[in-house]
Length: 500
Image (cartoon, rainbow, N blue to C red; front, side):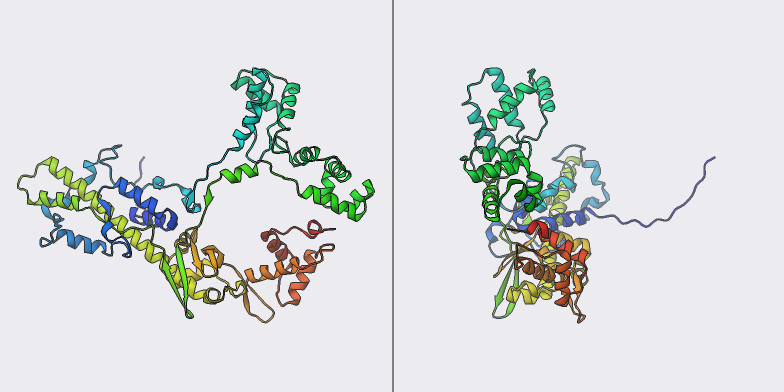
């Protein structure tokens, strides 16, 4: 038996324009030009105003003003009236062919640009010899049989960018059998790996850090210090990594000076043999700031970087096409279909122009509020003057949603006279001092870093001692919080900071 029922639900859905705006907010200035070019390629109704490119911002007309302009009979760029031929009564979707990119409506899908765009900045390529090519050149110098050379090539291909061969021997044997139809044994494979471990850079093809350091030490001159360093890595590696120096000294009968000299040899070894090649081939990144802050005789001024934001406008060709249609007397179905497509593209272009303009307004509003809150820092450059500030503080002052502020802040940079900073740099939580004053956690971290940098390296401060010292300075902080801040500063525990 069927039952009919009614349900009242309140739903919130984002329009395509809202989705487009949110995506544009995430795009940094370095990629905005690329994003605009993609839009122009997809929508022929959108074009750049090349004649007024230098100082003018994006088209300042709102959607209503554009609509008025298009519908005005006195305007030279006359566009057919929205009411003419009952265009708005026609369902545009019936003229859109599914799967046809040329006729399809504006694409507002998430794949307009990748999700990783927010983490990129401007880049340029630098071509160098790759790590793989460097190793292959040495493989070709080995006097190997054809079958052994194929195995060596496969092993080189399995070496990771940092220079390590982390794959286990049985897996390599199986892959050689299935992929290359080459049958080999563990003994033969280890023999070829030993050949490759003699390659430059020293330490390549090691399975772990201990073997990597050991391989490098074996290539060094057989001095007393180097031999002891080899023994420490081979026999006392765990004690060395945990800085249990007393145990090493007792076992090898070493004094402090000898151990210090040996440690200097070890710390100069390269823990990542392939890193040199990886860094030389990696795209060199440089930051393009989204904002500029200037100190004009004590008055802070902020401006938006618009070098990658050309002026946009509706194509005059598309306007002329609508004008010709409106003046014509014979209007068949094919013409009407073409006009509906043109209107569709013009609407999409108007939405994009408005979204870019709104992006600029939102960015400027957000940056202005950040500037107001952190004015003292922008005037002095003193990190200790940074005030506690979270996303909600800016949200309350702008009237924008926290998610919008988050999109604006993410991957955006501001250039000041003291350097270029990520907007995230200015956000931090607060804590109270003994006097009840609220200070930024960044200030506490800075003081913690200064205390640790000035400690006696032979007997570094424990987290308990650091807590006491901060409490004496008036900062009410728990030991676990000190440990958390120390880890965020990438500072190890006291035992690992100890030096001879």
